[in-house]
Image 1 (cartoon, rainbow, N blue to C red):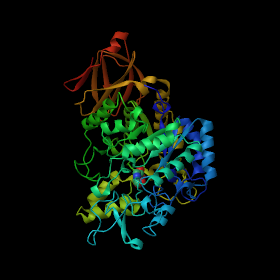
Image 2 (image 1 turned 180 degrees about the horizontal axis):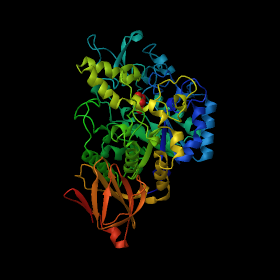
Image 3 (image 1 turned 180 degrees about the vertical axis):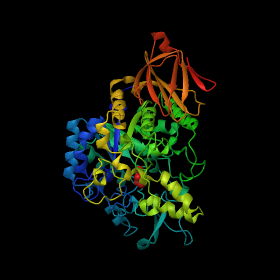
Image 4 (image 1 turned 30 degrees about the horizontal axis):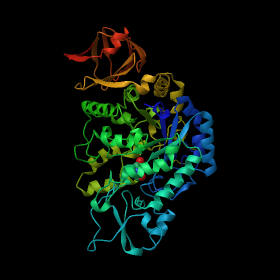
Length: 561
Ligand code: NOJ
């Protein structure tokens, strides 16, 4: 296998609107990011994934782009962007931009032209259909709720939009459009960025008449063409957002000889707390055994071919410590346990801003406090479908993506130090306790724990390339796995819950990292405390390392051999 820089990197995702406001207008900006580069350096991340900063009416916080080659004035100017690239380059941090090419804003000049007449040269950049007997072309639904078709009076046809009606879908079958996109990508690469995170890229091969949304027949052909025309000629990294991926599909994207993408985001693990067949608002408790099964399937299936991305959170998901940890008495311990579990696996880890502080979901209660377009639509839709207000709000509080978008908590001062003005979105009131300044002043903070995990990946090849093996799949509380590389073996033990568990062990292990200050070496008898997480280096003679570790349940205690 040819080793790549992005296989040993840790990526930090910035949602610019909520990161840091440098000019007091209440929204984060590029200068704000520049001012916080030293913070990211201290954390130790290698790459920034920058959510969209392009010109946009901000219907969907920048995922509705009206000009790919200028910057949204609220975020700054192209000069600010160039400065950010320059400074990051000097500091050894790479930048990956968000590439949103499944759709544009309806305010993009292509769409403004396209909607004028059926003969317009840009018409075919989008997807237009006639109505059927005075009705919609078909019953395709938008991912934000309602129909995916919007009527356009000027030409008496409907256009397709898988997101809001202000986000018309592009027609990838049009070769001229594809060439325009490749030219735009190259101009960004020329400016010095290191690659792209590709928004809902599995939708670009859609066939709306056949109601095929994801994984359309020409999808991989387009990606190979894109690769050959743009980043394939450079040492770039790419990650595709692919909600509909299975491991087989993931290999199509990421097998190096196919020349498509470096890795993808798949979302199977993140959907385990919804009812089967339901929406993410149909809540269900997470069963740890399901999580182990899904993570392990992906680890095993991409072992030989392809590459995993590892993430718990992003700007579309609630805060992980509130979701699957314990954001009350065990907030810091559980945040560190979740970090260990994820970063210990094989793949490229992503950290979403604030995750390194153990930031939590917002405690807001009323729908007015959840401004996101998706949340607002879902609220109405669920009430219409007969769900009670209480049920609906309970799901929104748990799962709404607004939870990830409250401003970054920098210090205990007004507005969490995010802005001197009025923040575009309320800060989470727990900022007086949970904030970067406090975290950086305490050696045992979640921040420094992430710093250690990042350093481990940099210093130990086993973190990037060790083979993963799951142990004790049937246990409901413990997530245990090993990583093995040549003569080295690490054992990762995570107590996912509050219950204490006894371990008896035939192996000896040295603590590499633990979320408790006094975790002993692995010896004959150990106790795993609430949310305790430990990485052990299994010691012994070389031949011992080669023998697989065995784990069994003996009554309630776990025996490691
Ligand atoms: C996925 C993005 O992550 C999300 O924030 C956005 O709303 C949709 N794609 C549409 O671009």
